[in-house]
Image 1 (tube, rainbow, N blue to C red):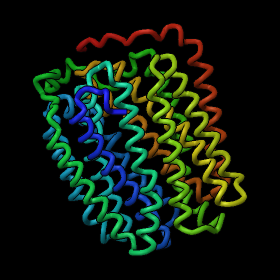
Image 2: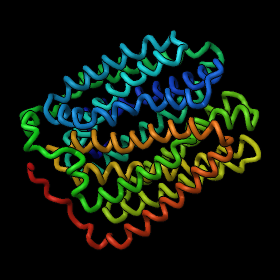
Image 3: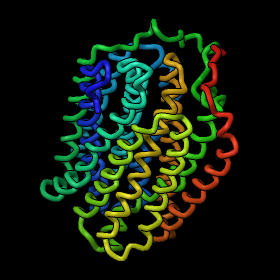
Image 4: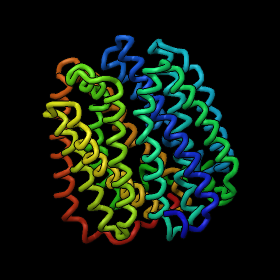
Length: 404
């Protein structure tokens, strides 16, 4: 996958560091979720913890975008990784929800800077003509790391308690910080617009709003995320309380979804045309929703595994093709702002969905929540497909981006 790409050394270092970090995140997330559930936390508290990491994506998106487009990439990546290490260590010992939420929010702020910086840097590493291949490789390798992470998180938490998996996450942040220091390619302030003159520099929202391809597609994807993301809050309750299975099955179900995402991400790498990427994004979103809807009717926990694989495949196609479109249709000088804004839109939808899921869980059972989320998500994907079909002939070239 990577052999024929230019900048192979830097790309391998960057993707390896991010893959290791994603593995640690997956291990820690399962452990913290199980910790709250074991401590008797309500679903809304689980939703609050999961949603806390997305709040900085929304509130800081403009600041993060300008920061990424106006400062040296290596400095930002090292600072972001160091902050993540410092914020993760206390989570090894904490059980109180309030300080855990605060630390997760700090992690979200640091991650928003690191994510936007890496996204803007990768096209510089491989060259514009290889962006689709690099995005596919990045997506599939990151998801591959998460295939084992949920099961490992469940096993470690069951055998040693939730502190060890979180300590593993802290160690992986050290790895990705070292990787950032070793990458030779840099995106320096001199190579991007002077973002201090903010009145003359378009923000990420303005850039996305003016793009005839990205604007409707991102809106539709965000709506699907908003509808279906709330199931993350109740999966642990569906597995353990409704289907009477153990924590390992919770991890296996998560891992199965990730395995499907690996297949979908790899498959998306061969979709080279813009029209094909748009269609794959919409079809993938619908497939993910169909898989989730099936959770509502599963008679046994084992049935969740094939449904998760199916939904993950759709998720992988949709996410990878959407990311490729964002990079290909955005000038290099604006990629930090567009990446931060996209993270804010999708992360905000995910955060709102998690909070909504916690509230809805007070009135609805886990099965009912999966049915509502999956079916409404399918309806949203269908509306997106119908509305975009009439605009496809006009989607040919990226929109020029003036300075103001």
